[in-house]
Structures are given as C-alpha cells and as structure tokens.
Length: 450
Ligand SMILES: [Zn+2]
Image (cartoon, rainbow, N blue to C red; front, side):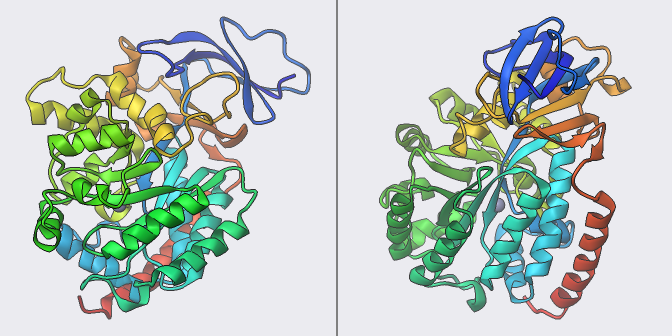
C-alpha cells in the first residue's frame, strides 16, 4: 500500500536519454513503490494524493559541493582571485562560532530546498572547534535534506590560521566523534579529505587520509586544480605537472572520491580520473565568479568521467541555486567551445541528478525515479510565462525554469516544501536568525586584518 501518490505529472525519470511520460508515482515508507503511465490507480482513503497537473516530476537535484555557512558571506569579498579570496575565507576561522555555522547552514538549506535540491554535500574545512562541524550537521538534519558531510583536514599553509590547522590524529579523533554521534543516521553519510592540496596539506597527511578513509570505508572530497596558481604550487613544491597527477601518488583519486572544480587538468589527468573512477563536481558559477577558468567538462564526459554539479559556497557563487548552475554549466561550455551543440540539456540534467548521486556514493539510493529508490522528488511548475509554451522539456528545465518554479520538494518520502510552503521549517525565523548571525560575524570580521 502507498501512503503518497503524485498523479497527473509529466515524469522525467532520468533513467534514459530523452524519456518523459505523463503518469503517476507512488511512495510507501519513504521509497518509490510504483510508477506508471496515465492516471493513478484507485488510492486508499488515508493516502495523500498530490495532483501534479502542469508540473514536471523529476528526481530531486543534487548539489555535490557547497559550504553552507557561507551564505552569511555573500558578496562580502568580490573582485578577488582565488588566493587572496581564500586568505580571507580561511581567516574567518578566527572569528566563526558554532552559532554562525548553524544559522548560516540552515539558511543555506532553505535556499537549496527552494531550488529543488534534495541532497547536498557539505565540504567542511574550517573547524576552530569541534562544535562547528556538529552544528553544521545539525542544520542539515533539521532541514530534512539528504546530506553528505565531508569533514576535511588542513595541516599546513601560510594562509591557514593556527586555530584550524590540525594534526592528523586530532582531526581523526574529531571525525570519529562525529561518526559515533550519527551511527544510524539514514539520510546522512560522511566523507573526509584534504581541503585544497597541496597548499594546505602535507604529503604525510595525504597518506594518513587515504588510510583513514579506507579504515572507515568513507569517500574523499577535495578542492582540486581550481586555479592556475594552485597548479603552479604543485609544480614548484613537488615537481608535478598537475594536482591530479600529484594526488595519484597517494591513492587519493578513487571510485569513492569527488574532486571539486578540476578546472586545470590535463588530458593525462582526465585519463587518471577515468581509470580510477573518480568523480568531479563542476562548479561553473563559482569558477566564473573567481575568474578561475573553464573546466574541461565536455572532454571529461567524452572520456567517461562521472561529472556532478555544485554551487560551491555562497561566498563565491553567490547563491545556492542549482537551476542557475545548470544554465551556467550549459552556456559556459557552449561559449568556451564556440559550439552550440557541444553539450546537451540532458547531459546537464544528468550531472545534476544521476551524476551527483553516483559521485556521492548514493547511486542506489537517489538520482533517478525508479521503483525501490528513496523518494527524493521535486515538482517543477511549468505554468509561468517564462516556461510556456513547452516544446522541449529537457532544454526548458535547464534553460527556462527557475528556482521559483519549484513547487514541491520531497526527501525520503517526507514533504519538505508543499506548494512553496515549508512544512517543517519556519522560513521567516531561519532568515531572521541568519541576519543576526551575519551582523555578528561581519562585526568580528571587520576587526580582522588579512
Ligand atoms: Zn568549495
């Protein structure tokens, strides 16, 4: 028996190229238990029914790379390249409190849910106290999202403040504590990683991280080859041609690793990504905002590398809107290659759904609409003038639809947003708390010198 049926929807299951049909999806105990064309069969009297007429029903979007608390730092440092920008972002560790992390992360989740995100990977890298990580995790859980918490480590680097530089044993103790607190948290999984190698991780730490990740059977998340300056560091410090080549020595590229950015990677390095089964999180808006360059997404897709999409933190985006990111991903490749057909809308949608699920080790859990998968679903209202008339639904979801068209968001069978209203969060309170946290943080930041 089902407890929720969504009927009269245009279903985009993301299971094969170009497939869409009018039909229904039923959900029982948080999982998809029936999918069919046409009208839903008779429903039980106690079953919730959502009439999705005029809406697309698709898998929830997967944001494979973010730093949620950074919504507090939207548009604070602009017009800076990666290194001077990072110096400020890292410097914030000196004044960030667990309260900032909670309030900022919860606002980030609210924004993500409003843009149709059902799974988010939080790449966590500033931990002046263990509570900062705890509070970020708590915010993601309170929001009801499916979440991956990638607790990364930094042990060196001139721009990394002492309060957030850690010895590996100390960091692993803290990660163990997080894992112990959330042993049976079904919607929450974990990763670790070096934050931005090699500029803030020693080679010793890379070996330790690989060992620890294997021990705990968790994946690795890292910022990789984001800017030319980082690649220059690996050349000067380690005599390597690129970051992926360097990390390969330590066994960091692997099936359960996700490399954010991967902008400056060579053909040989793309081959390493392919051979090791490493996934990439492409963050086009952030890359454009920081002037990093254009990731070779088309080349990676052609080679068979799994690519997902991320917003990155709002300090370099400046939003958590994955619809914006999809459109940017499409247009950036077209202009870069000066070829309008170089990337298809379905490829972009795939990165934002199936590709993201695979990258985060959730391929059997979410990312498509299939019987047996968890019910992580969104309804996108196509009724607005900017979505009409509908001629190519895949192109129009990528190029026309906006976050504000997301009507309903369901995670693990729970309706988090219904008809644009939050069901478990008080949005006004979340925004008010984030504004207070922002005031406090900016006051503290203004007393810092970078
Ligand atoms: Zn990032």
